[in-house]
Length: 275
Image 1 (tube, rainbow, N blue to C red):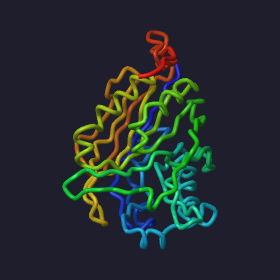
Image 2: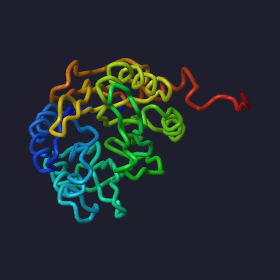
Image 3: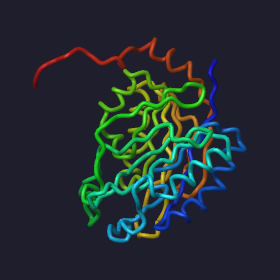
């Protein structure tokens, strides 16, 4: 059996990238000491700031961003595969890519993924978000090979609501799907666990969902409640709060194939027309 211990780290990131990394390091060290070989952090790990002008002063193109190299060195130092849930990377057009980085245990970048679906919503009660005003959306799904040859499909937060992305990963052979997130409190309370379990069941994949939680420096509140879910929809580990912390779970990667052998819906259904 291919057994892989993984961890999801919950953070409360603010507006200073170096300070955010410093706050994450103790949790990453604890997760590594607990035996995790793959550790994932949330969306907006390096920078969570709704003030676009201020945000743009703290971002750079990937090749010029010292934080990317620092996170790679951290993966190498800890000897773990590290998913930086997302960092903010200048797109060169006055906007920013919301980009996941998967670092190998040598500190090299094994994969990058730019968030495809941008959070443009009106939640009511004066709470609205217009990510497309700040962020440049990605256009490519990314399937990476991680520790023990695990096939990992990358996604970020609002992507969770778009099932075809996860079905595509399943059909491409994904065994793990990562969903680093910064869910709002109202949508988190209503939909976070339900959507995560649905995506795990539909794709018959493990889902690792590290989250931002609590009240942030920029005034935004996020839901927390990081989770790790198995291909049958069972919650293997979760945090029941929005404070920084981490969870660990042991994944049996061979269980993905076993689950798919029972229910082949992940292959897609029959074509149809209408309505």
